[in-house]
Image (cartoon, rainbow, N blue to C red; front, top):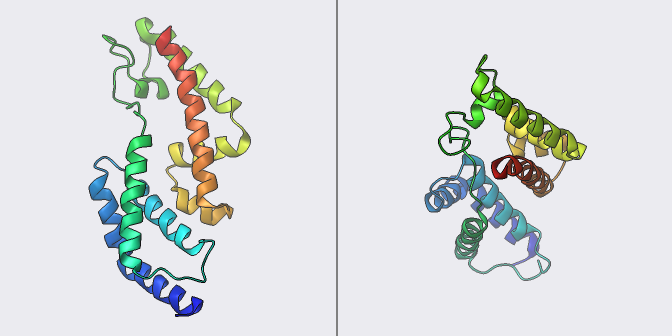
Length: 182
């Protein structure tokens, strides 16, 4: 089978089976957001088409894709870090929640100083980010855009945007973790 025939069969398979592939990933990652399943599938498909040795097509494409998805889900679950919920208590016994810091809740003299400190650190952490990282965080976390839509409109690869967002969120987490420790 020549390269073009193989690629056209692969594209047809992906178009036909995309929803099943995404559903397969989501079933294995219970708490995955919609974009996680989409991103994992898209990454696998991209890797298949960017293989270094395209002269030898994959013989059993379906089996290869599902095996790759299983491995990628395992990697995802191993690397997954604990996330901080906006509804979680900021510190044990405190009624202050992270969501309260991000919105103005009026005057509460007990928690006002802590809220202002967290807010100041959050915005300082955002300001300290590189421009491209800050733009991705603001677009995805505050404005609700998906990585895929940003990649298309900004003409930047999805992997690059995911890496920028990951580095940015890691720096923000570190800045906010200092408050927990004090």
